[in-house]
Image (cartoon, rainbow, N blue to C red; front, side):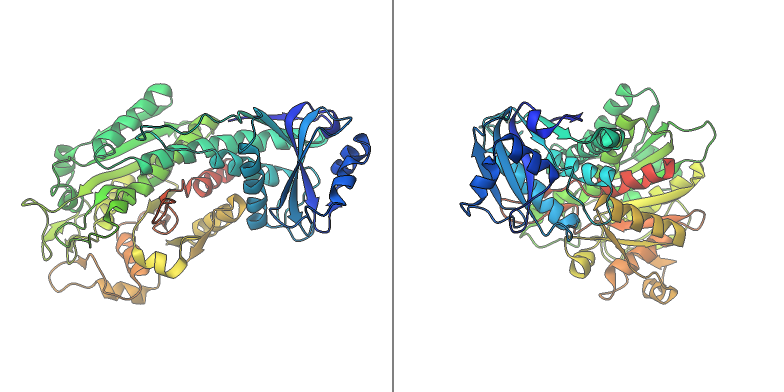
Length: 495
């Protein structure tokens, strides 16, 4: 999908479909009023028929209006103009896209300059619009014998006032990069686990480095990890015939010697639960358990497209969690890379085991801040559902930066407590720490476990178990989240 920014008038723009906003009670904004005047009142005449009232998401398609260069005009209801928020803006953009996708035109022009969104300026409004439209074009049909019909819509023109053009162009450029990162993340998540295994993810990382001279990739295989003392990681990967690895990606776009930011992603490419086997129903969706690693890769892709002047380290902890004769048993005790010992009470709490060694490895880069991203706990889905990611950390400033980035990117997180009282649930009579803390506060105790390995840097943990994919039925699939949140966080550090 190509996005083009123009400062032309809507009434003179040549396009297959001109998209105009319509407020509640058929209220026309100034741009639509000009189009109405140019067309000899054709819009007003159509509205008098009562086919649309301007409610959020309503659409009305008009053909052959006189005086216009547009072949069609699509009116999209935006509701009460002083009450629009991110959620309604998303509904409006999706409704417009759904209507356009059913048409034969190769392009469409959006004239939405009049629309005001709470908490968003021209840049913010445009960026969210472009992300929604680009993401709405996503199709995954690699394994379908019959591919999706070729998409007629190839270009979207964003009309704006000349004074707004620099902000709109910046928003479009950044949104396109974020959408590209989201699509990459979704592709990885939607791939079957017999294709997308740890070695495959490592290959994707190497291909990215070949396309970018500023990106260095190193793959720590199981031999290297054994030499490093990564006993927690190996406790997970040794149950599978697919070898595990930690993929280290260094992007040096900032000043030489400047401390990097670090993103650490959980990359369990399939999670059976190990010896603590999961129920069979819905287990196919455990291919999405690498959503953290996929979102880190997608964020890096956006950073590379934007060539952000920042130093960034990405660590992807990739393994399969399988039951076999070599798999870890409940009751086993392992020694982590940090030297701390862990009693493994449940092999299905494997994400924290691969992450803890990756977090310890991150120390050597002396990062400014470390953010780990993981589909870590079903408890987070119970607590927050599929709309909001869970957020915990040991540094209040970092947590607040991420919360604000989530608001700005319309990819929100919610902070959960990390009080010392919860740490007691991880006490073990035989080792330094147990890998589960019982049935209560599962998301918090999982973060408590990780916090034991983050004493030397500012750290935050994003639990994306509820946001990384949509579950069940024909609509299931990876979402591409939290690529917008993470990219926004890095953009904020640059700006």
